[in-house]
Structure formats: structure tokens, C-alpha cells
Length: 121
Image (cartoon, rainbow, N blue to C red):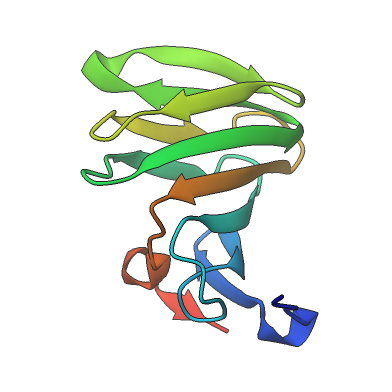
């Protein structure tokens, strides 16, 4: 059994975005998943990107946002919705609501997302 104390959960951040690394290769021996809790302030954006070797599932916990998909397509994404992205699927998110948007991300196989963020605390 592994138990991860909150002190061992790192926050990665970019302007307007905080990604809490709940379970990742730095604090867990899991070889199957990375779990993150992502917070986007009003008007924050996670640009379109892909993960070539991992699938990702997002569960919207709070607020409303816009999924940014391939070919400049967009889709509403709000609390209670689930989005699954296969390996190589283009995805991103824009919070154009007036409140914070929060989602949980499960990535398999695990990824260390430190490369994508400017600040690590």
C-alpha cells in the first residue's frame, strides 16, 4: 500500500493554471496512472496539445469550460462531464466562465508533467 501525504503533492503552475500532482512518478511507484487536479482561473487556457503514448480522462468537478480539440473544434465541458482522449488526440481547455474551473485528470501510462509548467512548488 502507498499513502501519499498532502505535503508530498506538488503544485505545478503556469499563469492562471495550477496542476496538483496527486499521484505521479515523483511521489508514487504506480506504473499505470498519473492523477492530477487542475484549476483554471477565469480566462485561463491550457493550449491544444497531444500525448503520443498515453490516454487521458478528464472529469469536470467545478465550473464550465471549453474543450479545445483538433481542427479548431470546440466543445462545452462542465461539472459532471467526462472526456476521454486517446493517444495522439488533440486536446486543451479554455475557461471562459466567471468562476474557477476544476477537473481531475487520469493519465495512463503515467506522465511526469513537470516539463509543461514554469513553476514547481
